[in-house]
Image 1 (cartoon, rainbow, N blue to C red):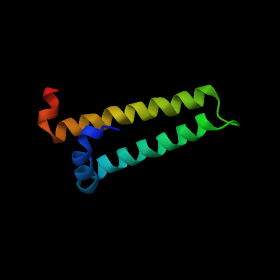
Image 2: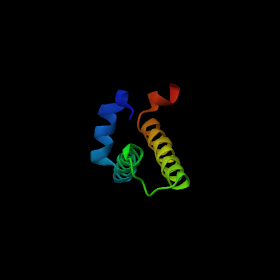
Image 3: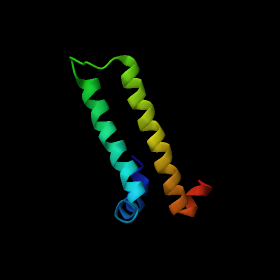
Image 4: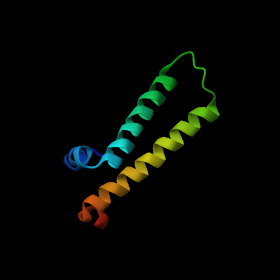
Length: 77
């Protein structure tokens, strides 16, 4: 996620606990969603999977907003 901001993400992961919490939750959701979608046998229904995907997208939006706040040059992009 956001490979072009790798350095800024690394910095924020070390210095901003809230950012780190969001980022780690997003990563866990990504792993969970991947496992579910790659599984041939899944106990998740479509609505549960959609909810996980929505949460992941909301986290991504929040993470991007924090990246923009941490680097004002991103606000111009």
